[in-house]
Length: 477
Length: 113
Image (cartoon, rainbow over all chains, first blue to last red; front, side):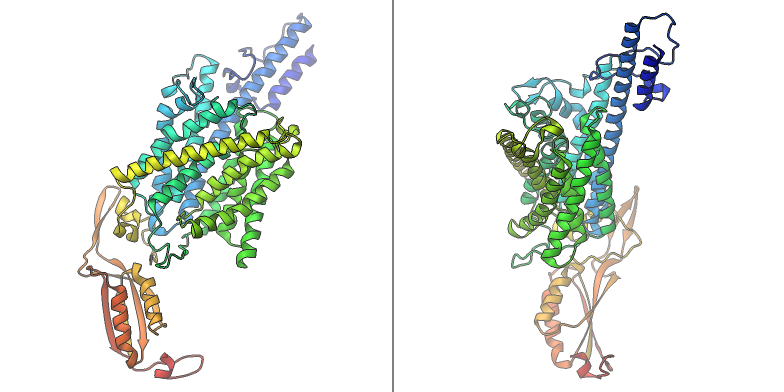
């Protein structure tokens, strides 16, 4: 009898709920039972076995529940830090005269996004379903309360979802960097967190129509929901905004506008890679046993993505280009995000490698053929590789890993078809909404700064001061 | 032999450089410069405090030319750097006493060309 209890205590400790304050918390609804019984209590001597078993089960459930809270929070904090990663990547790949402006954009999209997602976005995404298209309840976090464990869980779940929404919004700032009016940025950033992102999120994660297909669409951590939304909105925005002055010569030939700090780009990529360990494994939203697998697939795809991009650009130009290889890491990460819980480690390497190769060609195609100026490669990394990763789930999904079979696992074309339907519908939604949004902003408040302002830098004209006071910055374009 | 010192808008550097090269004047030195003049300054604000920035960023070109290239160089420079706005810049022309190329020890007009 003693053994049973000590087993339960061991489970408690193993699951990391050793800190006494944690046990006071109520369990999330995911856990079957909640208990306020303190496991430190000495059990009565004459207790029957079944009572002890029940108590042990309850203790284990409490432990699981506590672990779930901790894991979702730790993951949310990791994903929050990705904002810093995006800020560093974007500023490093652009010019010194716009560094303050990029910092302000990355700061304010999170601040505005947090409040917008609190007020409206979360309700549209996770509220009671209406025709499979949008949610209709839970606005202003009305579903959360401190009186029940379900209510308490809403706080944790909201924060986790909020940092995801902010990730989708912040992607766009890179593609439209160095020439967008700050106030216009604030407006479209709000629109993304309020409406455009939550609707897609509802379709896929909130119980909407894509999650109810006969073979449900799989996007485990958001290749489509987060990254392709950010990427395709970037495409619409950058196309309507036009290229930076000097990006294309009079003959239409693409010119390089080198970023001002490659070490910052590298720091940003490392931060993003680190944050992705919250982004993908955290998307279990529970302390489940597959977080190890997800972390492994995530890591392998990132590594393979860097390799794929480096080798491709090396063969193309004769040099292993630093910023392109760093883009390759992000391409691999974005590519594996949809299938990170459904594919084998070997498949993760293949997906990452292909995404890394793809991103090089996508950057060149968008730059040289479409002639859309994307200073940081956001459209290629998030839009193209996000969609690619989503489709690859249909090919590589394996029953042994996520319980669903894709094409190569003998599952036929059913899953791939669902993945195509999802990717295409999100593409269309983002392009249409993006087109309307950016055209409307252009007509009402203007989307682009003046020529003088762009040449002098957005830091001085938009924010009143330079980012690197005391440094002499060589600004010739 | 003449030494042309030109201060131009930084954004015009690429165009000026390309135009000069097309006109056969492909050798120059370029440095960052700060200057004040008719363009006046602009106001910055930092943590709520305003201050005027009087010195503006310019690019300084130094071009040594043989006499027969002087007119072409000046005309090309003015055409390429001019936007008909205050702040387009200035060109100074100085007599150049001598010139040496270190590697070959050439001297004078040979060394410039």
